[in-house]
Image (tube, rainbow, N blue to C red; front, side):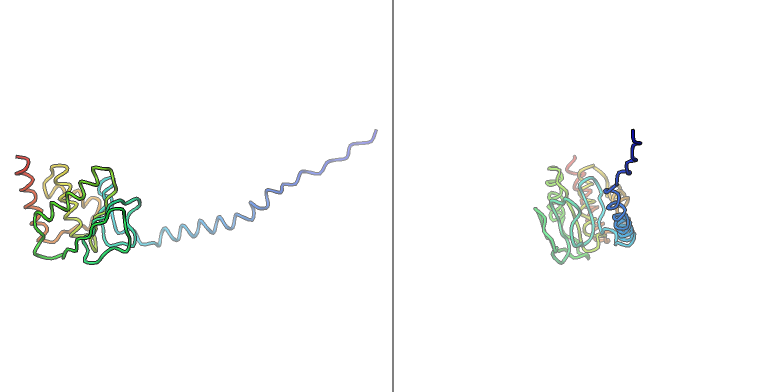
Length: 179
């Protein structure tokens, strides 16, 4: 009887491609880390689920269905529903009826669970005024309560004095409607 010849260890052919992929994976991780820490943060904030307020951007928040643009320039993108109402960020403020129509736009799409993006150039004054008015109507909040809530999500929110006055008039109209 002859002694058994030792069998060679099985070759691990699958190992070398993995070893070759390690530098690519590391490169991808480094690239993503650099991108994450050096990218410009989005110029918008989610105030409530599905309701965003912000400034002029190259593309709206993800899954946006309806955009309300209050800038004096149009958007470089489209969404299924898009309204553009060029509005100056200065006195005189638009009318209460103008504000009611913008709030109705937001209400219509939010009640259908659609993502809405309300924006102006910087996301500080005009868009904040409309979102604040919407929150006042939806939750029965005062101007100051609604504006404080918006600021918890968008710290730079600062409607100009004419818009603050318009929101005060809006608060009175809502109080009269409630009786």
